[in-house]
Length: 83
Image 1 (cartoon, one colour):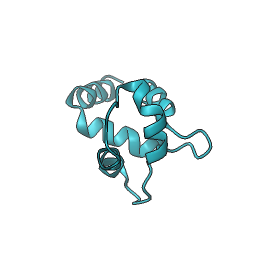
Image 2: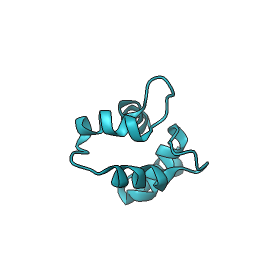
Image 3: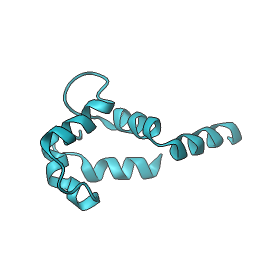
Image 4: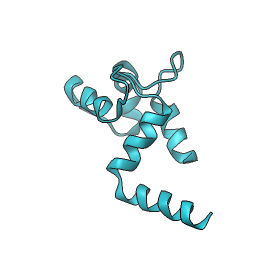
């Protein structure tokens, strides 16, 4: 979860502490989100936007990452079961 939080903060707008379309456009290229259209970036946000605000908070980001990554989900479940 710490690694997810680090990734979130790399993508987030520092003033709102949320991931927005603009923060993805600004910070995304540093993490490999090159040549993505605004529509593609909006789709990324919509994937996890539980409150329909057009942005992701840390919770939304972590849930979206766990849902879309079977490896992360398995790791999360194993740490819950062993802890």
